[in-house]
Length: 185
Image (tube, rainbow, N blue to C red):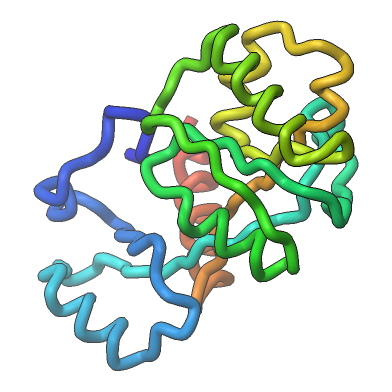
């Protein structure tokens, strides 16, 4: 089971898992820390434990998911409806951008009034300002039939995960499991 909105697997479910993935680890997590965490998880024999860290991919315009771009060196308004935008803000800073944050509650359903507020705030930063948001938030924003002018200013900063070690083993294990199921049919 993977996280999906409010339907997340509880820690109690780890006993029946074949694979446990520890997410949001610091990039510099060392082997001893991984061993300590694995011990605290009370892993059963045969269970595999993997450690991942968030990894940001290149941004793209809301209408151009296939074309990664560099963010222009202009004022940025970061718009989020996620629990903690700290990682996103740190990534923008790491890329050399100063960004203002407009934070909404986690899983926020954007309204027409929110779009008006976001547009006004972006315009207050300057005529060249762009808006950067998450893929989750972009999906909720797109439901509001955004103007063409606004769509040209909204960038998505996609986040993925990077395995800290054993990425090839994870892939081999998952592919092997899927192949074994397909071979049973």
